[in-house]
Length: 209
Picture 1 (cartoon, rainbow, N blue to C red):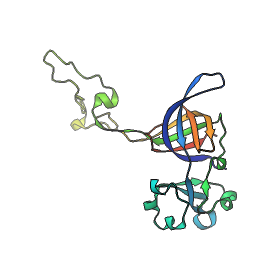
Picture 2 (cartoon, rainbow, N blue to C red):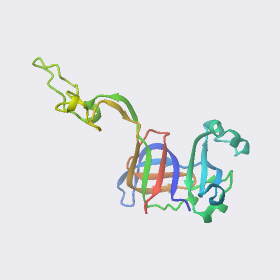
Picture 3 (cartoon, rainbow, N blue to C red):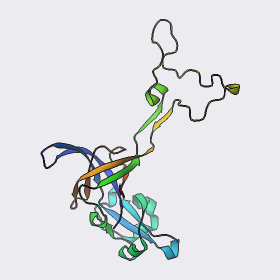
Picture 4 (tube, one colour):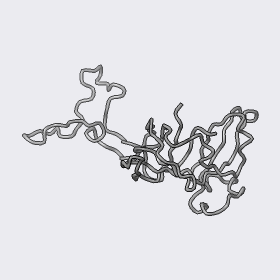
């Protein structure tokens, strides 16, 4: 059984629990991942399976070993998932990864890792919540960051000082999300709450513990 599942974020919706209360959930698609290669402890020094998600034009086709000749061209995402040495014989190239291969059940707590939305180059007010200066009475400060090397030797800037720069597009992990529902037929997991990234972004769902 695998302790981590790779999927693509579909988007947010809502479900009703047993008490008829509305639960905000994020739908994550885990379908159509194929085993591309099995890494063994004897040959590679560790045990893992390399899995890939075919590109859109191949989604309705049966798996072909010809796809393995050019993985980057035929697969949208290629990742590795660690397994135990005893599980090496249960996987083979071309096998479809399903929800039954994962040790998940409804109600489990999981961590979801993904890349957050990118917001481009932003100033200190937007990026770090700086207050900014007065907008009137002759002030020319406004949204500028101000002095950055004040009272420092040769005006050097402290390492890690908050400055304008690229915002977002960072790997983020949201912890302790609860699995509300699992749709094995569609290969979709519904987790309570929001997960990083836009729709279609790759996310990793890892079981806690």
